[in-house]
Image (cartoon, rainbow, N blue to C red; front, side):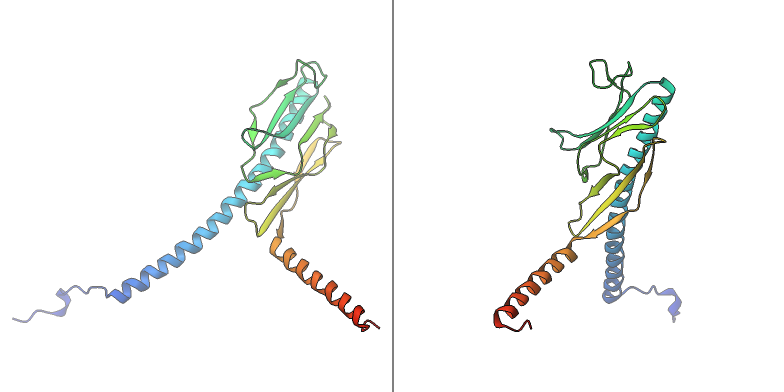
Length: 198
């Protein structure tokens, strides 16, 4: 008795399995690179948003409590992380013995840094009376080939803040440009030594 071909199951060949596995590997590798970049972006922009939100919180607290508040962002010695704290003056005078921390401290992600320690002081009316620098520039150098910078721009009169545009600095380009400029200066000096610079 003859059996029909429909009853036989067709198996995959080794070549077909290898092709499918290599395609899956390529897709997984490209998605890993993509999600790694997305994770870096989310971490970095999230840190800038948190700083902006803390500025809004501090301004609102100064207005509602009718006294001076401040934000301090300092580098901790033990953890080597940047820490943001909101400080309540209590008696409308900052930097005396009765100042207290008004909110839970926020630690910036490990790879996110600032150029220098920051301090912002808010008046009871909600304006910024003092700031260490404007804008506050965050830097992410977790990828040595491309350093990211993101400014948090302060509006001192209103006491508000805005996140600026993300800047991506290609460090490999600068190195190559530096090498070519050195070569050019060496060529110029050689030409002048040979008397060919006329």
